[in-house]
Image (cartoon, rainbow, N blue to C red; front, side):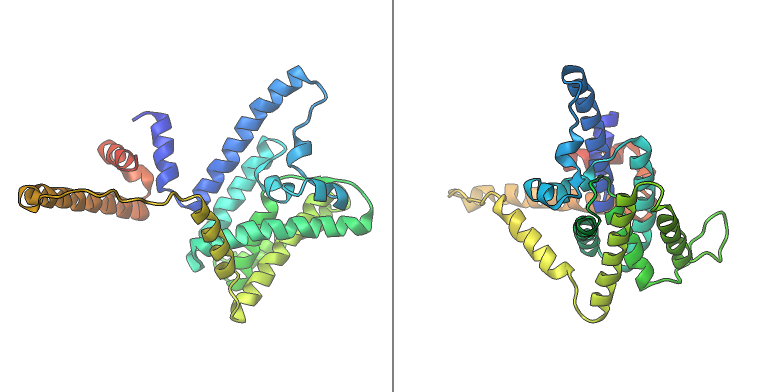
Length: 287
């Protein structure tokens, strides 16, 4: 199995967090190369103009898709790197208490809410800026789990007294003191993401889970693109094919059991614990 096949397998078997990380890395690499080519051909071209969220309300209306695309584009490598690190850190604690569906709701709706919050704030400022990066959506994840379980222990450098609320308070403090000096729009979006995390948990604790309507909309949208299964009529001679059918069923059961055993091993020990044969088997089974 080559490196590409190994990455494909990790993408298939990994959860939503890993997929989002892959999407962000893939978009960054693809459009970095794309941007270099366009810079050579058109020296004044900047593709950020078409994917970044503009602070001007009229520009936002004309580029409405940027409320979503801005979350998947980053200005430079270190911008992407630290967002991935914080996403990986915060998702571990979030998924300890919540489900993947709740993660997708908080991440995407948190990013959208933060984008709208950013545009509204700039309506009063009368200034112009552009927003890029997944950090606002990540703040929604981090702050929601912190509001829900603030005293969750975080082990950093073997310092067992650190809690989640200490981490969030420190991050929020850094955002506030840096606002007057640089990246004002980014810090505003961070506050918007944190605010959404707070709102989500308070609604959840009062009995309203935003996951349900959001998941219903996503499922309905996904079903539009699912091809309808048409089962063709087949004439079956039961006496002559009975043994073949039984054999196929038995083989399918064995294969599924092998897949389940491998996935259990991944959940307990991680993907790297698989043998080469197990990785190849899982990759072929996923085709």
